[in-house]
Image 1 (cartoon, rainbow, N blue to C red):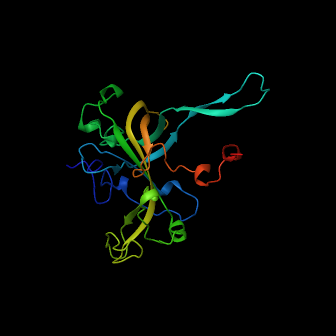
Image 2 (image 1 turned 90 degrees about the vertical axis):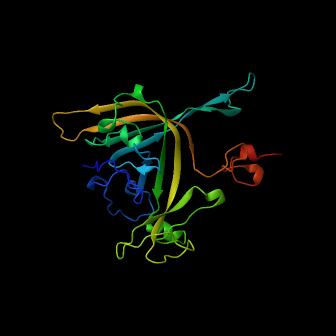
Image 3 (image 1 turned 45 degrees about the vertical axis):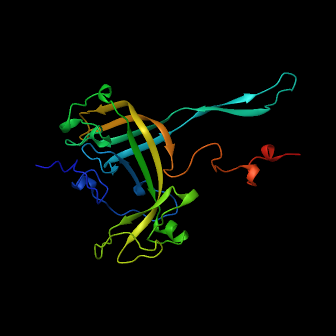
Amino acid sequence: MANTDLVPNGAAGLQGSSPIYNYGTSPNTRTAVSQKVKILAPAYGSTAQLLQIGALSNFSVSESRSVEPLRGIGQGDIITELVPSVTEPATVNCERALLYQANLWQATGYAGGADGPVRSLRHHRWPFDVQEEMAYSSLADSDSGVANVGRNGTGFQGGVKQSIYPDQLDGITGPTPDGDFPVGGTQGHTVIITMYEACWWNSWSKTINRDQGMIMESGDFTVTDMHDLTSQYGEFLASGNDPTVGQLGSIRFGDVA
């Protein structure tokens, strides 16, 4: 019998075909909501694409760096400048319902559970990628002039793309020819893409409780790099608040008198 919790469904972008992976509706607000966020990772046995990993109950990202104050002897009790240090690797914590035929290892590309020998962190020999897609609501797409269609970003805004959803009236899907107006039943939303590249699990836990039926798995992984998938990163990254190109940042950095 096929493992319906780990049969990659490329057309739907899902790791399984069981009811665990069914879609539902979500509210349309201008505030971002968790119901419209997709987390994708490699599924064990699939080489085609990253796929939505299913029943996540938590996905939290944290990143930090120290900022050191510069002071000078004889200058009084003032801070002359704050100097950012190097950024610590980003860490992600996620919690997922344990499925008999697809555990947390399998959902990130490892041969675990029913499909292989991975039972411990020490068995992970290769890193994996994670893609976060935050879908716009219909209101946000309407404000952007692409209501119920979405858009593919280009150039500086290349970190967004059009995500196609099935039309529930006729089932017709496919890319919109001109990217602006729905044709042939195409429906979609703009999604903001964040890539977490070359990730390694560094902690994992599974709790079996006599007072709780559902078994949850929790893990933390460390991220080599975070980016928007398309931008060219380097010294002159257009990151905002740059007074040398006429942007409004800090008056201290902008004062050249």
